[in-house]
Image (cartoon, rainbow, N blue to C red):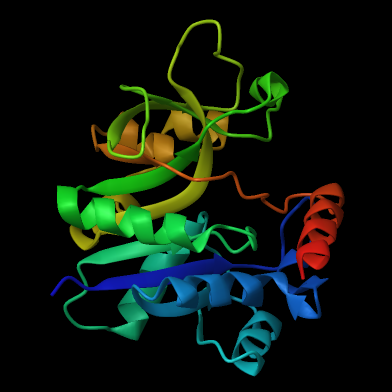
Length: 246
């Protein structure tokens, strides 16, 4: 039977919104909201990987599981690989890296990505959603993915490029990239041992390291775009939405 492990990297020192994992929505921290969404997917063990004791204690207090990692990691992917090695789970086939700042991610999208990875035996998989507002193309905080084929609910197209720029005049198949990745364990190990590329550093997108080294990333269409919490405005917007729904 195929085994998946969900790891959620989380740290306090985000430059634009320090301390965001512990900001509250409906009296529950953002990181614990994400943990609970991951648990609801019911596809495998869920562990938060963090360098911060406050985050660890918050997750545990709210019924989750966490593990302390080093504080000097350059990327969240490096952090989850350390956590995977420390946890020493046996016979894991896929590791799903779920961002700790998207508390309203659709659980069915997590399940769907895992299903596509298993059925297609892919190296790396991720999610993307349709861009509903053309203004999103100009938003440099919003990462876009260009795919080989037009995405639908049944295909798992290859990613050709990831960008923060507006490439809508040059390409047809452009989607809002959602920062969740599923890796075959061997692919994750290969990826974290590759040096950071110039392209990755300049664009501040670590997935470009994979493409620069001829690793394939497949993309599945998500039902919706979750709001990532990067700024105070993002936090207030998602807080309003989630508290209204409850």
